[in-house]
Image 1: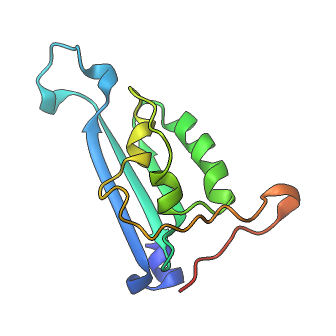
Image 2 (image 1 turned 90 degrees about the vertical axis):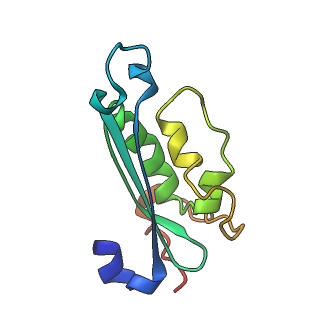
Image 3 (image 1 turned 120 degrees about the vertical axis):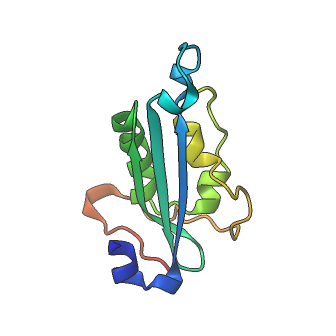
Length: 124
């Protein structure tokens, strides 16, 4: 909602995923009853600059800390897609989020987040 208000609905693309974390794979429980992890990657502009990332589920705190650095540095969906997924982890979902590899091949990591530099803004 905030991204749409800031950048306009036509300039925002949201990627979503919901799944049972692999940690729960061996549990003798029906798949629908296993705890779920939900993720959302919010991109803005023609280069799909990542402007938001939401996750709820096991390990969310650790994922947010790491991906926060990438967002602060100006990562794009293409930057996320170009990462090698660490398997088996829930975090791999962020770098393989469907559709994978179809974003404009532009890297946004051009701004240093050091010394309070402002985060990059998408081209709209």
